[in-house]
Image (cartoon, helix red, strand yellow):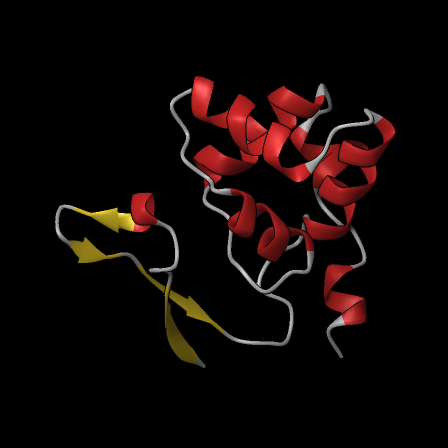
Length: 104
């Protein structure tokens, strides 16, 4: 278990500090593979997803979209909800139900 500081994107800074996230395991989120799948189904690139999220007031840069998709970045509940809305799927459809099976 460790603390990961997301400071690669300018909008990751919260009030002059960094948001810390506590992680245990190889995959840092349960949605990455499905985000990529549904994004590609919609013929959308990572920058477009990032831009559409920004229009909703959710700042996830293109690099962070990439890290979400390769499961090397955590996802907040607000990001989860917003990504689902942009991709026109439910949050349930984004969540990998086999996450804990594949973590072993």
